Every structure is written in C-alpha cells, then in structure tokens.
Image (cartoon, rainbow, N blue to C red; front, side):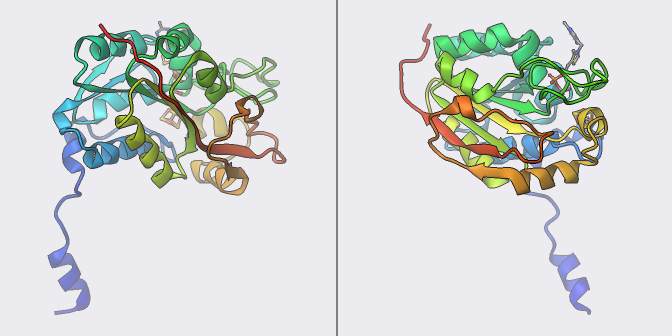
Length: 276
Ligand SMILES: Cc1ncc(C[n+]2csc(CCOP(=O)(O)OP(=O)(O)O)c2C)c(N)n1
Ligand code: SF4
C-alpha cells in the first residue's frame, strides 16, 4: 500500500464545522474570488469555539451577496429585507437576551439604505455583533457606487469615478457609541475570527468591518483584477494598529497604491446595553 493510499484511507470524512453550514443550500451563489465565503467560514468557526451552545446563536442578514450569509450558516437565522437587518436583530436581542445575535451584511445594506438603523443601534448600545462586509460597492445589483466607494473609484453609476466622500465605518461606529470596533480583511482570518469571538463574549453593540474583494462588481471596473489581487493589496498595505483611537485618520483608499490600510481591534469599552 502506498503512502497516498494510507492518507486517503485515514482522511476524515467531514470537516469539524461542516454541521454549521447548510449543505442543502449549495451550490452557493458567490463568484470565484469573492471574499464572502471566508467571512461565513470565520463566523462558523467562531461559533464552534464560543462558550455558548450552538443553538443560542442567531444570524441576521439583509439583502445582497453578503446578505446570503444568514442562509448558509446552520443556526437559527433571519434573512431580512434590504437595509432592515438591524431592526429585526434588535427585536431578537431585546426580547430574547439569552441569544447571541450576529448580523452579517454588506456595506450597502448596513450603511446606505440601513445607515439610519446603524447609527441608532450603536447609540442605543443594542446587544449584537455587526459584521459589515465592505467590498466598496453594491455587488449583487451590478457594481454601483455606494457610501464606501473611494473617491475616484469607478462603478456602473460613476464610470468616471465616484465623487462623494466615503464613510469611514469604524470611525462612524466609534462616534455613535459602539463598545467594540475593529477592522480586518479576509486575509486576516485568525485575527478576524478572534475578534468575532471577543464580541461573542461582550455586551453591547460590537462592530467589525471586514474588507472583502468583489472582483465582479468592483475589482474589474477598477483594474484590481481577481480576488487574489485584492488580497495581495491587503497583504502589502495593511498595518495592524490595535487600540488606535484617532479613527478619523483610518479612511481607506484602495485605489491609491501609496495609501496604507489600518486594521486592528480599535475600541473596547463598557457601557450599559439596551434592555427590555
Ligand atoms: C428596498 C430595496 N432596495 C433596493 C434593492 C436592490 N438591492 C439588492 S442588494 C442591493 C445592494 C447590496 O449591496 P451590499 O449591501 O453592499 O451587498 P453586496 O451585494 O455588495 O454584498 C440592492 C441595492 C432591494 N432588494 N430592496
Ligand atoms: S458580485 Fe461581488 S460580492 Fe457578489 S458574489 Fe460576486 S464577487 Fe461576491
């Protein structure tokens, strides 16, 4: 018997977090090189490592490619309407405080149509973790520019480049009262998973921005190329600055090769959360 035969024979037949993904929803809708699968995997991994029983985790998403997350994870989940993930999540968090609510949705869903809910959920310090997948565009609807698109970056609604000042989401979350604020990328899988796990053990409104390639809607229009090329940009330009407090300075310009990208766990404070 060859070494290869032995390895195949002894290979595990399933992955330890297989049961946290809904196999009946496969094949998934994600394009090759999309970062959303890594985010879903990281969330599932954090659940598996959390102290809470799996049936106490709830996932809520809005609409968008990112919003498919709630359909792929095998915990109780709610796929809400576009922009309204946070009000649905608030209802669950306030009325079933024993549950750990995590919202996974897109930058468009959470900071454009849902931007009002974002600032008020942070202000009221609702017990939930928001994982905002920032791919700098509206991926699902074809690459329109949105509130996170860097100035000059192209999209189907701005063929000559976006002109509006984008949101700096960690700064926004900090300014409106979030108790935990972080930014990671899908390259920083371990750090991202650890941040999710920290939020699962924390009270109040926790916000994690995770940068994620959308090669179809953003990369192609901006000559970034495929998903791996964008990950290469993260590798070259990201600097970890845990505890950074001057978050007004950490805006991102993915298009300018001279600009660094600050990532890290920035804010970790305690204040009373919203209770029923
Ligand atoms: C009320 C409403 N308005 C608009 C839409 C169309 N729509 C669906 S997804 C989407 C944008 C999604 O972008 P984002 O949240 O950034 O997620 P991504 O697809 O990039 O992951 C829009 C505008 C909708 N479904 N419902
Ligand atoms: S359009 Fe963009 S965000 Fe949507 S699945 Fe494709 S790569 Fe991912």
